[in-house]
Length: 79
Image (cartoon, rainbow, N blue to C red; front, side, top):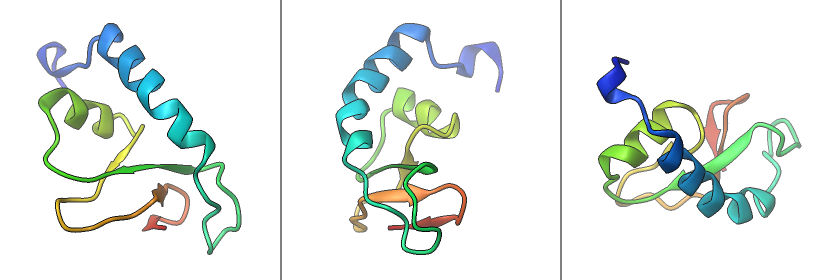
């Protein structure tokens, strides 16, 4: 990522505040039986800033037609 493609701290804080309530409600991954590595799954076409936020590993983009509650980074699967 170049400097131009980095997410601003202000935007990151906005996204963190927006997704924090969702993170607290994420279910356990059925494979590893924990939600420590589970991040929110975001549906729909992302803005450029949301794409950068996803590239940082804070959320997982799931496309327009898929509906998932989260993504387990450890098991690399949607839940």
